[in-house]
Length: 154
Ligand code: ATP
Ligand code: MG
Image (tube, rainbow, N blue to C red; front, side, top):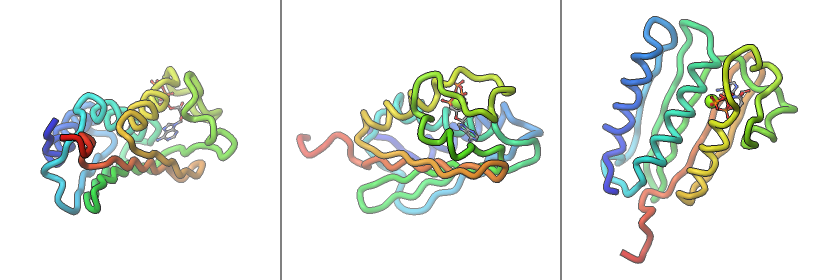
C-alpha cells in the first residue's frame, strides 16, 4: 500500500519507547524523501518491531537505540543500532535459522524466531538484510527495501 514511512516509523518508535520508558532511549532519524512509498504494512511492521525490540532487549538500561531511515535511489535503508551485548562472531552466521539463539543471550528470554521471520519478510519484499556486531560493543542491523515494491506492472 501507499505508505508514509516517516509517520509509520515514528508510530513504531513511540509504541516501543513507551514499553522501554525509563530504560533504553530510542532515537529515530531520517534523511531523504521518505514520506511516500509502496510497501506492505504488515511485513514492514514485522521487520521493524522485531529489530527494535531486539535492540532494546539486548541492551542495558540507560543506553541508546538508534533507528535511522535513509530514502533515495529507489531504496529505503533502515538501520537499527544498539550499544548492547552484541553477538559472538561464531554465532553470527546462524542468526536467521529458526530457534537459533546466540550463546551470550540465553539468560534473556526469547524464542529465536524473530530474525527468522524478519528474514522471510525482507525476502518477500525483495530486499536485503545484513548484521554487524561485536560482543559487548553493540549490534547494527541494516535492511534495504525497494521503495516501489508494486513493481513495473502497475
Ligand atoms: P524472539 O523469537 O522472541 O525474537 P530472540 O530475540 O531470541 O527471540 P531472534 O530475534 O531471532 O530471537 O534473535 C536471534 C538471536 O540473535 C538472539 O537470541 C540473540 O542471541 C541474537 N540477537 C538478535 N538481535 C540482537 C541484538 N540487537 N543484540 C544482541 N544479540 C542479538
Ligand atoms: Mg527477537
